[in-house]
Image 1 (tube, one colour):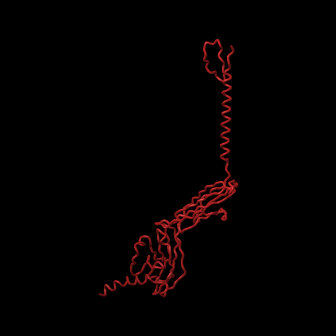
Image 2 (cartoon, helix red, strand yellow):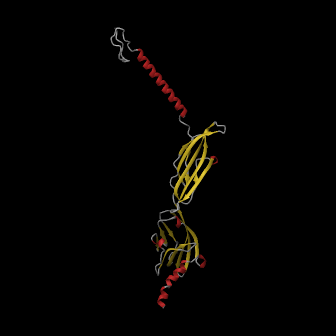
Image 3 (cartoon, one colour):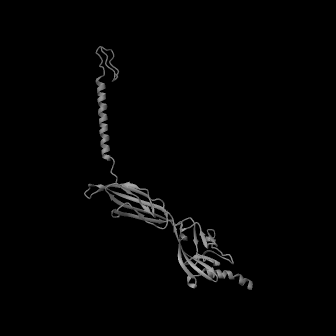
Length: 289
């Protein structure tokens, strides 16, 4: 009977130690902050004491005390399946490398170090980020009209800005525009159900009287600039009038040329046997009789 009982002792010790909390006599040190990029790797380090023999290291979630990874000098620890292939502990510098970072990895962790019959706890905060795509900005501008129907000379533009794949959730900013002249039509955001990243978009209206460079920013990523409220290079009505005048002038010139050619045609003599005379070349001179 003694054999089976003693064989369960390490498992019982592990269950007790994994739920260790700062309130059971362990020393708590200041929080250590780490940042990781979505899909990449991060190394979480627990500070150790020089010259102190470390017997155990446990890294677990702070609030649920769920075991992540660690080591014990006497027996091998059972790492949960979800962390087995993407976490690796370094016993020398008391660190854990976590790869293929997801948004779900963001949160608080506790690092518990055991040495010489005592232990010390360290809180770790992990922040996950994902860079937004370069925002796309579009604009549609129209003449600004008074209530009486007359044009004011300025323009009113509808601007839209959108970006995808970022984390955490962010908002749209228009750094070059006067905030008092911005009217927000629509604010939109959606979360990817798998990657937990965000798509952000916004539509606004903006009034201006002169050419204005515009760019939008989402999550610190700035779009390529565009220019709005540019003066029309040549109004459409002027182009239409010019085309009509050109067609009229060309028609007039063509009519004069044809008339001149007709006047220079040689007329048949009464004694000529042929009643039909071919059209003479406009550039040839009439022959003397």
